[in-house]
Image (cartoon, rainbow, N blue to C red; front, side, top):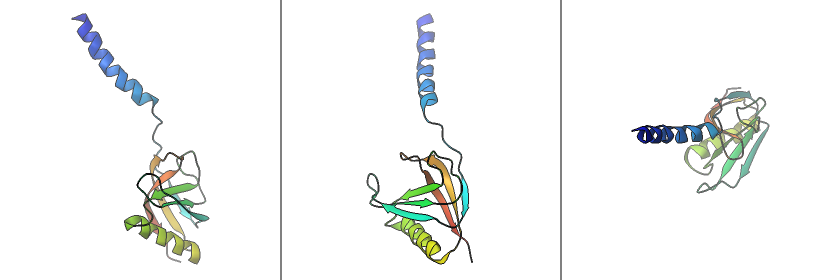
Length: 118
């Protein structure tokens, strides 16, 4: 009976220890202002296009002031990209709300983008 209890306890402790070793998830950040840079690069994995945005302020991840999203060549990613370029060219302020998730580069991922009226 004792070995069964020990096996159950070990079975619970190993996954718990693994969770404690993971990098903690950041809390989602929001930055508002004028865009400093819109950087386009090759996406990772199946994504063909990645966009990174430099904003004044601080994000929740290790690479401060940058947000990024993948799939910038289609769907929502393309709409976001077009809106960011328009805002950069016209001086519109934007509000970027992050997901709180840091990608493998240490950049916070985008949840929402709001383009403010002039």
